[in-house]
Length: 255
Image (cartoon, rainbow, N blue to C red; front, side, top):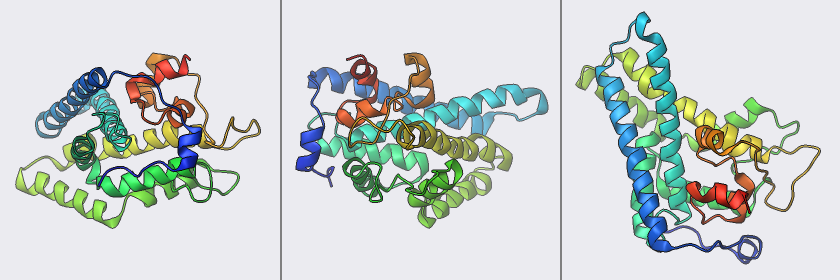
């Protein structure tokens, strides 16, 4: 299944950005491969081979932070696939790569998240938006809980527990290593994605929003934007240019 086609309202209120499809594919795939490989190397190295001791705690915290960021990267790659921007005009490739990234992330199914994400774009900041909690005063933890239970079903929980069991009982991985270097980064990445990609961009406030996208852009410089959420915090630009990949969003913000 390919991504949902845009409605007329989507076409009227989003914009096209000129691009070279071959260049975008080349850069996008290079960055995607680098992120996926980095995630895999850190995952295997930390879960299977990192000796956890108190003296290594500072290094372990650094590994957790790095792996959390790479988890966010996996999701952002899949997000670009939902908009067809990783491999332009090749929906089968976007679907395959998106499913790989979401499978590594938490066993998600690409098609279901794809449909939900396009509902978010069509109904952003309304009761019909699956990512939005329309209950003032828009508390952070209430909204995060709704966000979490919307996307993490019992299927994901069962799959994660099954993989944990295979690691611990099948491969003899330390339960603590599996928790610290696999479970915790995954949970922290969900919190990171929610904070910088959903809550801060879409939380209503007295200033209001510029248009019906009900989205704002943060004021972070480019490097901090990359570190927080792979530029997903440039969120109004993303809603205006939904087919622009994550690495081009700083250019859209500068327009």
